[in-house]
Length: 48
Image 1 (cartoon, rainbow, N blue to C red):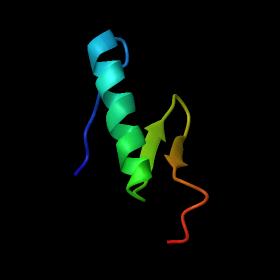
Image 2 (image 1 turned 90 degrees about the horizontal axis):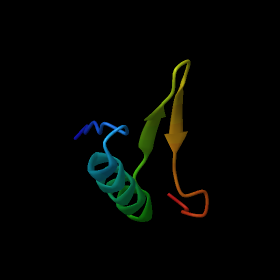
Image 3 (image 1 turned 90 degrees about the vertical axis):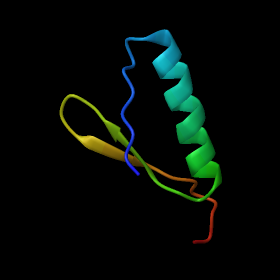
């Protein structure tokens, strides 16, 4: 499920970072949008 967090809001930013880190630990991917591109975050040491 996609979730969006407002990084200008301190509470939203903290929640988003925690949830993204948890997702990566579970072997999931996270999408990190910037002004110009979308980045994909993952655990490089997971065999899956």
